[in-house]
Length: 171
Image (cartoon, rainbow, N blue to C red; front, side):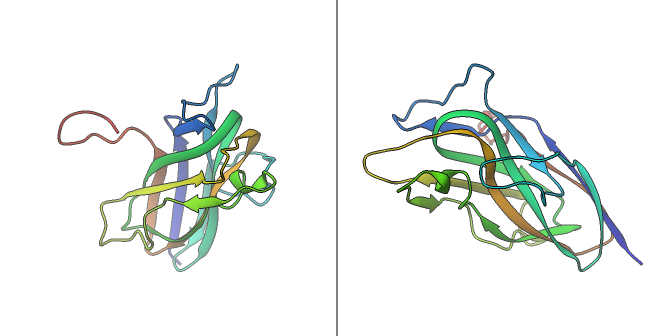
């Protein structure tokens, strides 16, 4: 039977904004992660990070984009790179950490799904609290839970890293 492997790596913190619109900073610095087997994560707590899983062609599974040690985060955006000949993003949910604040109203700023072989393998995912007055969240948890389908045999790496533009400037 066909096996699709998944490796996760985070190379760059996403753009994180505090409730005043400034880039969020924490004493230890916010950390972005990808958890390939997120069953022990909740909106506001993270379990053991798993960076590699094996699945069968046709399987649908969850992967979390996580944040640790954020201070007053109110919005975030990241580009996830993937091999769309091996996996396809079929759904996403950004109603986790940002939604944990009482009264928060979270807007999903992600691009549409599916992200599949017809796309460029760079999936924009993010969320923003649009509550007035602005509020921010401190702590760690799930930024987004992605639903992914293994569409072919092979190995892919999910990574969040700078995207080079035609102007030769990273996004």
